[in-house]
Image (cartoon, rainbow over all chains, first blue to last red; front, side):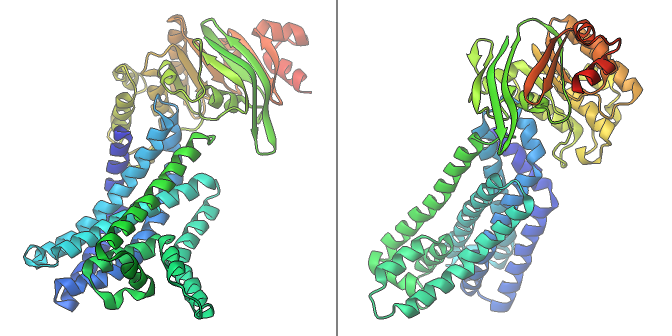
Length: 260
Length: 231
């Protein structure tokens, strides 16, 4: 598996998309630092960008990489390699290269600006960590979609829809149901609703870490009240890991039964 | 060496293989013939574990291959269409596959034979169809596997390369290897095959030598014999 991972990773690092992706974050990081003139403020602004952008890029690249490397996958399938190793190797290679683009793109401007002297360094690192976690989650979702649909158009459509659903529609539905059922106690419902959305979970995780109650929102506040800050963070982290593990297990299951 | 028993495979509603029984126990060249969509490639893909059969068993050297992967060390496979990861260079692809398979792999002589030295440092995406096919040939033949499977190997080759390729097949055959080939070029079949397996609608319609098929249909050349079967 390590060998496949290595090849996928280096193959991607040489492609121009990783540079474009890194360059985007680089410019974004510089712009935010220039406008905010303060590391911690820039981190908060970045939070909102990262939390919606890494899922989009993750799911799209997951789908695209699977479709584009189909021939290569077929070449590998005829070699004496376990199927699981091929697909997990590719998945990890892609997730790592996207995470590295994110870390390098944002890391350089922040380091240049004086991140190491700033108290916000751990906030920044936890932001990068969450971004990487979201990348791993959404690349896995993208891979799942591509494994289930031979048709590229359908795959891409579903990928965009998944992202749209989890970033926008889910919150909308959540708010509407809050309005309708406002006469009832909704704490447990809100808690459950947040757990089923990795984007909400990451937002809560970071805001708990940054300790900014004002931005937590209803679900975050419930989360904090229910678990407390530390347990809340552990819980959010555990659930996010589950969001990686379950889709990866489905990749293993699905790829083992597929015809090529 | 290879035993196929009652192999069934469907893709959705389309039934591709309907109970294939095949025994390959001696070295030599076996050509798998049949019209488009008769299941040649599917049979090969089942052998390689790329497609998973619905029913039936595939035994390779006494072991069922379902879910196994180690046995593929014994098989070299050349796919129908040569498409490779576009960002890699030719030499990197060779090194990578050597790295992934056990037991070295000797590409030097083959690269020279097919005159691939000038393109070794080129990216795979820039190669022409014929050159890509030559790369495909080198990838397949650089390992000393007892079984070689070639799916439409002659596509896109120029006459010189084709000649060199035929010589290569002879050499491998004389080493006592089992070679499975699918092709539509009948002169090629007549020239090389020890045995023919003719697939039609997912069944083995005919099995035997080139001489057998000619006597059975009463035709003088293979092309007409096949045409007679199909009518």
